Amino acid sequence: DGHYSSIVNEVELIHTDIDLSVILEVAKVINIPQRIVDSLIGQRAFLTTTKKRPKALRLLIGDDSTIELMS
Image (cartoon, rainbow, N blue to C red):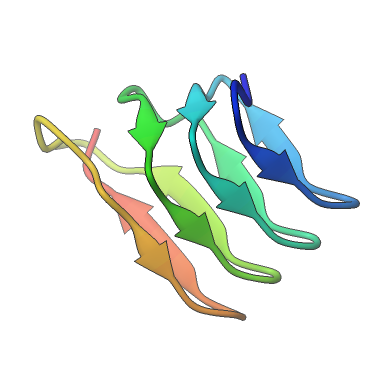
């Protein structure tokens, strides 16, 4: 996780692969089956999965966001 990425304090990454991205304070990224690349995840953002999944992700997520991705 986190190859060539900037991950700030209190970030929670669980079962997630992130490269070439910036993850800001207190963000949570949990159980994302796709690799996240070239992305900015804002402060206190929350990403998790649901039942269906897209084939690729490119994310620009603002502060205080909550995102549910298909699994």
